[in-house]
Image (cartoon, rainbow, N blue to C red; front, side):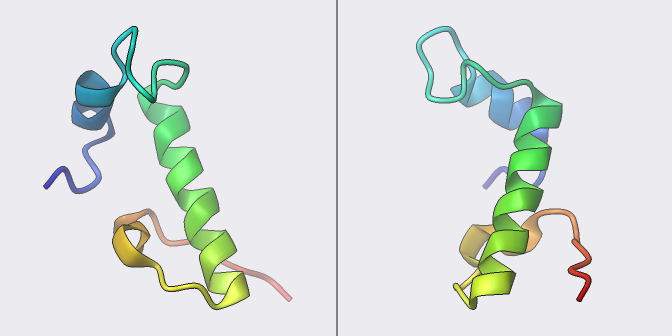
Length: 59
């Protein structure tokens, strides 16, 4: 629905009373990338996080 349009996501859910009110669009992008890395590392299905920026997991 929103893809990786972090500004649009923030506008929708980052309102004063929204669940993402304490994050800006750049922080949303970073959080999604961190979650994707965590899921890859632990073998958890990516779900919507497969759309997040690609991450490199070093050894």
